[in-house]
Length: 497
Image: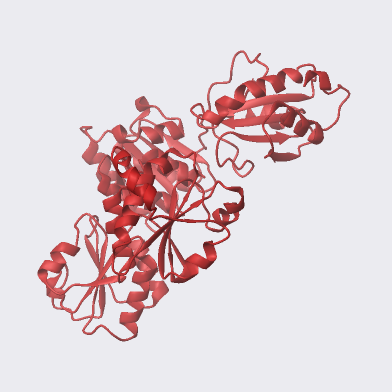
């Protein structure tokens, strides 16, 4: 959950898809729909008959899904004329009978697109654009050979984008075990990187032009700009590629070329150190240099480093509960969810503070709204700083809602929870509470909050369970009555329902 939240807050993951042209194209789409509709009854059979297919998992109520509809349909129409034709399909993952499929493909949000190869035996994430022309270009590349042959300087110029990761194998001949293993790695990682191969290293823009191979040359827009590998074991080469494509310090600003590396940073299993500073600060070059030195020092020590421009990082400030007047600052988040914060840091203090963190001498930081001075409403307000006292140590049966202020479903539930709380006002052993999960840290490893609103119930004896049933007043009261620890107080009568 945390990784997805980070990425969505840092990046505008989906481009804003225009729908102006849909009205004029809708009449043609009605006569023939090129996107194939699949469900639980025909999915396996249909996918099994295709070497390559793209499947969108969507929900009818999802705004991003609605914006994707005309673009996806237009792309499907164009790709149906490809040689050979390429099929785009869709599955309503919100449909009850299709939820098993959604679970099988680990669908956590909408829309999610998957590339299925060889009858579904290989599944990869779709990582391309969301507008028709971009979809067509990306899918054509993905459905073709995993590695493109570079035969001329023009081929190399067109293929090697200086802003992207490009991997080229140099081979005296395109056969044999090493070439086959290189191709296997290209097939495995093709959704993330572009692969090519050539017999002439002189065509390549950087590196030793006299090598005849076999060698794998990885071009990148950061650090040393290229690196050569002579490892051809499939797993070992794939690992080397993944390690080499993470910058020593990932840069986050408004340059979209940096966004893929930001995604890789947050997908890393390492602890994540983030320095936020105004890139126009007079001391920025000093911050950048000192931070890079620290990152080099701790390379391979399970910690990754990012430097973010304050102007572009408002999502991070919201997520971590930070303020601009605290910058320059460093925040480190570990895999167990703990956060460590150093505000108003100076360039010369970076190395010593990171060392203190690694030595276990820095206390965790907790994001919390202020504890309310008055908490007299029927639904009690909980924040991170009083969560332990109000929920775990209260001795009460507590129903707590994890909500987001912008969430429509939360707004619909609010008056219902008010009514539930009023029903239990005379019962001292029951408390209805809520916490803004976007403004407060949630105890790690205890609550699984995958969306909003999420309801949990903690009985007076400490039994914890998630409420996943109906959300009417009657449903929620019935759930509490069935799971509470009984006390002397009488529960609300039916006339109160």
